[in-house]
Amino acid sequence: MSVTSSARVANIGTGERRKRLTAGIVGLTVGLLLAAPLITLRAPTMWRVLLFFPFLFGALGVFQSRDKT
Image (cartoon, rainbow, N blue to C red; front, side, top):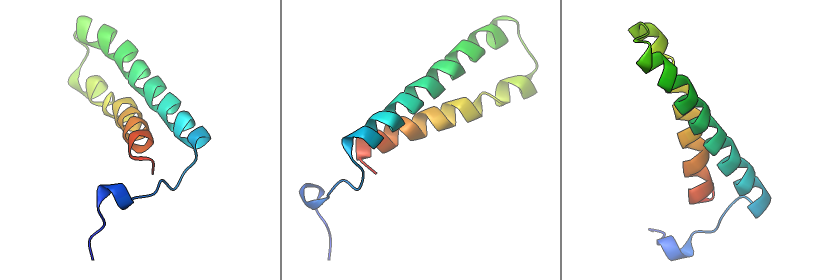
């Protein structure tokens, strides 16, 4: 049995969605603030690879708040 998008129910409240969105925006902002000097200063690739984590957590927060999960 398939569930249509209109039949889905959010499993978190508005307060928790707001927290996840805020955490996501903070994560993306931290990633951008760290990326700018690392790219400008041509930091070694291994340092720039670490930017994956703030962007990952930021994207997870934003997507989770949008999908209401």
